[in-house]
Length: 451
Image (cartoon, rainbow, N blue to C red; front, side, top):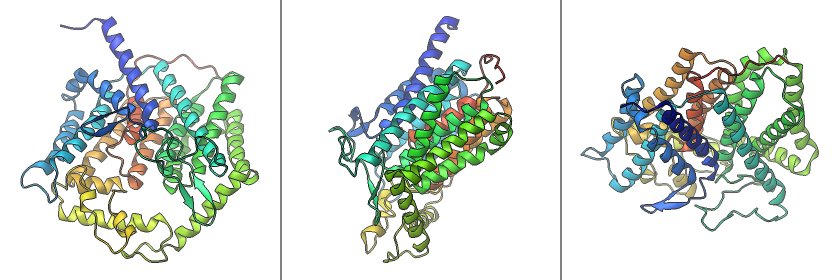
């Protein structure tokens, strides 16, 4: 029995709304709404779960396509660690919780492949995520100015139900405190803002019609605020994310910048505003000094030794030690891995606090997926990223999607280099947006008017 066109349209609208709500609530990870089995559940997880539930039929149909192989692999590969004999220190409870979360984010991605994409939905993606990014960035800049002055709302705990305190990080010798906005740490904030920048910049580069002055001014203010906040994080990871977006967009920038003088002026003005904020404002100058100090610390920090020394000043030492530790875990358990959620249980013993901390949590997703799921883990992740690329090449979307998808794919690949976010909607949502935009359009966009 087939559903009526009206019923399908209603379901499509519900799924689009749930997809948008998931993205809008991704920044609220630190503020859970309830607990399940003593584990905090944030709003984005709730909306993602509802999105998957309303997409069950689409997921079953997807099993009959080439993507079905990837779905089965994503379900089966992590389960190998649970087969007896299990790896040392294996916890069924811990594995079950992490595996359930993994299934949620993976199924969310594959359900997004069936979303109906039209001009209206694409515009809403840009508008609502741009607005959310602006508010998040504005609060981050409020922290930059307000923390030294002890303004209201600049403590590490904003609400009593917060998951954990915000991880404000002060750069020694400068007094500068890196903002987190409502994220737990600066790198998470910067990665999220890089995603929003990708959407806004792709939209600006792809438009052929002239916006009204209020709309253009609002877009410029939002973009400039987000860019300044991203730079204020003084996070190498955030800077890498931003660089990945820019490099992926270079062809589009090169094609359009000379054809549209107004766009060139707007982008130049945004960059000039960011430079002026750093050169002439007190908080901006503090951020510049902090970045210079971090660069000095990075250059002077040895990364080849496993032993903590007084020369270690930057996180690059911990990242290098973490990578060596993760590679060792892969060599010890290459076929099935440790089990999802078990990285912490295999932290290396050390003679210092930092020696232990640097191996407690995974910091490189491409490696950590191999440690927790065996060598099949990185292959599943890579296969999912490649699926978006193949979908993009096959459908050849134009306009906004043609500019945004390469940037979002590059962002996803780079983020897994410096974060282990493969069980986190913070990473899966932008990649899912890329998958939606790479798909076929369900209706023609309105004919653009030449500027």
